[in-house]
Length: 287
Length: 97
Image (cartoon, rainbow over all chains, first blue to last red; front, side):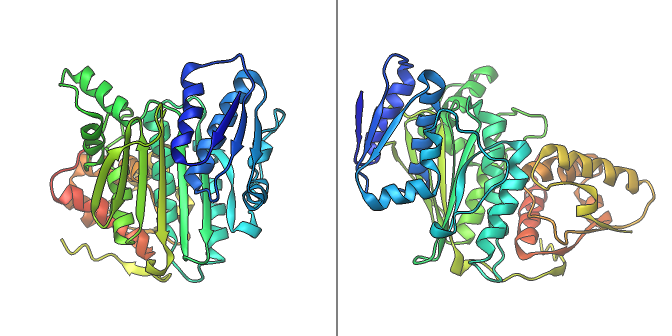
């Protein structure tokens, strides 16, 4: 089966195959995109992993030479290899100022985040990159606390020197936020809500589906606060909803990718707005 | 008593590490000393880590007592912001771990 990908909407073809669970046919992806964001990289990676698990083979043909060079460098083609084993050690991709695509879980999260911070610090001299620690750990924790993803969480991050931005993306193929929230509502005997309302509920401080005893529903609220303070922006896609968060406003729309499964979140951090590194001896709580 | 966070926990992201800090703080609280907790060389903490450490302790002894006894020291700007963001929710009376 040949699948043509020219824009974001076309990822629906990949999700449709995952959704139907078709294990009979080998897939060849023909990629025509001129540019790929970190979230694009993860959506492709997820599909490839699922296909490899199901039928042991997937082909990726990239039409644009520059895009092909990029995908080779960041290791996407290695994922296409059926005998690929993720190396324990992370090697940064200096030619594209990127970290390699990784499947990250709670055991490897600390290593991945510290390597990412260390690598980007060399491009963001004297900048306080603590926002990376917070956003990445919140996103990865969310996958493990809520999503029940069959493939762990996928992570990809890159520094863009021209725009002076860092983009990080985390994805999973789990239940998605709307379904998780409505399942919780159902267990509580509460009325079901629309997918948009479910995500709005999850974004509010201290709203939690109580998936763990110490889960207090602060992950998404924390991400929102730090991204707003940085004047950055974030895009969330989960089930049928797409949300774009910028300057304290969250705009919701229909997810352009039909059959979407799970959640992908991409955060853009403006390096120029990060504070300089400093040590504060005492916190003034100033309530 | 001055304690360095990196001497107590391996990371500042997970509930399990947060619980290690909570257990440690509980054990030294009995000595009736002010605990100066240095964040030097530690990563900015996640809300999961704080829920299982500070949040659990605040639930037990109350915010006022917690702030009187546990004093974060030597933080980065982001760490300070995260701690303020976290504690502010308790101050507003909207939080429960």
